[in-house]
Amino acid sequence: QVQLVESGGGLVQAGGSLRLSCAASRRTITFGTMGWFRQPPGKEREFVAAISWRTTITSYADSVKGRFTISKGNAKNTVYLQMNNLHPEDTAVYYCAAKVPDSPLYNYWGQGTQVTVSS
Image (cartoon, rainbow, N blue to C red; front, side, top):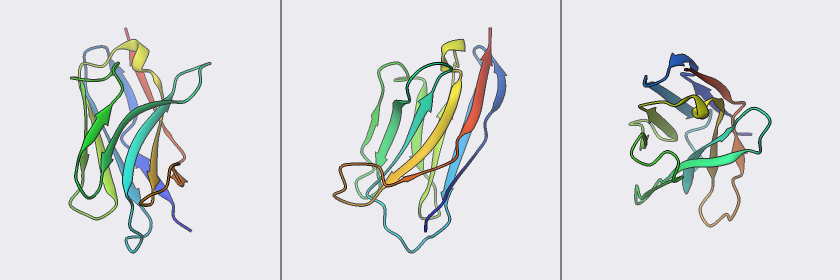
């Protein structure tokens, strides 16, 4: 069983920054992609960003392009989300997710970390 553990959430004022971290409990598994999703209050979970472990190609939701950056950590199966110029609408529970190579769906999910942006 693989667990993904997120950290780094918190309360920040609009315009501020936060850095989320995610680490997998097992280093022996090979992920194809790691990503971040979020669920705002009262809304569905939505895609935020993803990174291919092998190619480091990244993708972002339009709402966060130019403000958020996803990156791989030096340790295997570790990923970060640097969030700058945060807006109140970025308030959500942020989830780390990972999928093995060739999987169409994300196989593993973290428990989530709360990010609250005050206006």
